[in-house]
Length: 151
Image 1 (cartoon, rainbow, N blue to C red):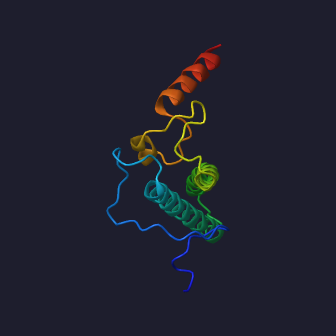
Image 2: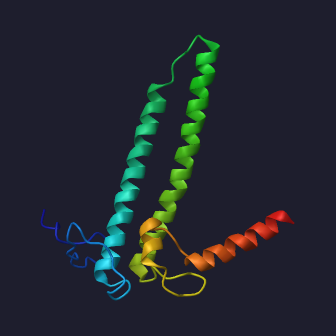
Image 3: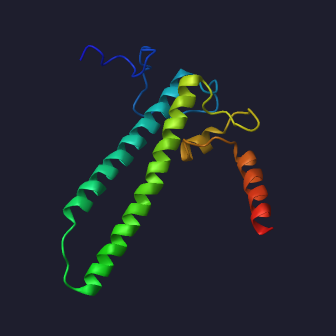
């Protein structure tokens, strides 16, 4: 329990105090220690929830391997299983994006648009903590993608 006040990771920096009700505000310096810690904790919590769900799915799939005599019931269960596996695959990809966001926090790059270098709005980061582009850059990217898809 001696490490309780320390942050995970190689740099072992002292943990930043955050009140329970803290929310990043536009009137404080962008990506200050408190904002960075707020997003780091959100990302870690989100990641843990996804990983817990994956463990539950794996256990459910292992328990669910039983012979179902009724063809319709078997088809329904296989469809449910396929849907669950697709969902878990999306969540696995999400975990890797969360890991990338945590790396950006450690490198001091979190919260800045990878295209323009400008700060990503706190509202956008709060809604999508793994965002790598400002809303404007994301919209431009999606418009370009749509144009290329339509070709």
